[in-house]
Amino acid sequence: MAETTATALPRGFRGAELGWPQLDRIPHPPHRLPVVGDVFGTDRRRPLQDSMRYGRMLGPVFRRKFFSREIVFVWGGRLAADLADESRFAKHVGLGVANLRPVAGDGLFTAYNDEPNWQLAHDVLAPGFSREAMAGYHPMMLDVAEQLLNRWDAEQAAGRAVDVPGDMTKLTLETIARTGFGHDFGSFERSRPHPFVTAMIGTLTYAQRRNVVPGPLSSLLLRDAARRNEADMAYLNRTVDELVRARRGSDGSGSGDLLDRMLETAHPETGERLAPENIRRQVITFLVAGHETTSGALSFALHYLSRHPDIAARARDEVDQVWGDTARPGYEQVARLRYVRRVLDESLRLWPTAPAYAREARHDTVLDGVHPMRRGAWALVLTPLLHRDPEVWGADAERFDPDRFEAGAVRARPGHTFKPFGTGARACIGRQFALHEATLVLALLLRRYELRPDPGYRLRVAERLTVIPEGLRLHLDPRSALARTPAAVDETPPPSGTRCPVTGRGD
Image (tube, rainbow, N blue to C red):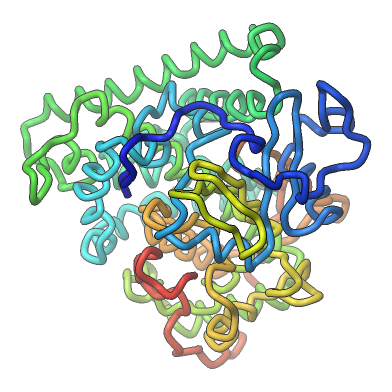
């Protein structure tokens, strides 16, 4: 949604002291020091989990200061619901998201609200995520998933544990590359990650580090990292330029995928087309965002399934009932996996892989009737804590329980309390793509394997703007429950349906 006021807001970091007139009413960590603020004791490698620790200590709205940068954090359900009001608040592009602009520019994820290319790209690309388009992507998703199954079959036969995050990254990169851009990275033929993945992780990690290293010191402390980041961005740009060049040089009989839409489709009302530079930025945005977050979601879901064999058995029963002996399940058969989808949603509740989003005031307002905010003031919503708010999710909010997403439970919850894909007009355009892909893959894996965890493994969450379980390896046992009588299938409509998150009830 474009900025509707007369003048655009200034870009770059805006400290909380500029926008919150009664900032002193918001608690901050104890032992704050002059000049450096709350720096001492900060975990620079895990700033999200560090902020979650302070959030539990200080309450649903709090602030932290790193040298001259002061930030307001929010996680309470009522406050997050208020920030979701599109008439008063909009997406704020700041912190790590703004740090990605040198490579992603005005792509869908990183565009400022007053940049016209966001609306243009959204309107051109939205049909690429329609029901008809999704059904067209489904066979290619299956093809990539079968490559994963072949790889895991070989690992199982050799008695080796599988590298879950590594293999999920290969799967999701190939899926978005093939369905969206007709490109094959050959990830499953490689013993090491594709250089695109290495460069992508480098840029995300650098953006994360810039969040916690203040501007005056970043040029000194991150000098070597900045050089590596320049090389990583150059590689991402070269890779995408080659991909686009190859499509332009083809015979013109494209498949109607996302890249074809970028190159050939004009805006239905204005006739505008995406400029070449913006096409590059959109392709990078989709390749990065389209696989990094989904790979994390699948990895967390597999971790929880391995630790809860009763839940895995229930999900497996549903797959048996809905799919039967079908070798290649159809598109509609995936949508009928209600309980598998709940497993995925519950994993995204505990560890939303895009773990924060920022909102800024469109005009002077008062948050939750308590905290005055000037136009342009912003807050960072900590989604993992929002998803653990005991007022919304109960005293057992840390417990993994997919039945929280049973249709009746969803209807009983306040709106805007489950936000793994952001909120409002700028919510993730690829939400249904990611959910369909992840549900399909989880079901295929459950139908084929019993998942056995390493007894000594304890969940460690790595952060690079997104989050992923670090060092997660699982042992695969042959499926032992083929003869189990399937449970009854839940035929109630899925709670989140296929509605756009902008026009849906709030979740």
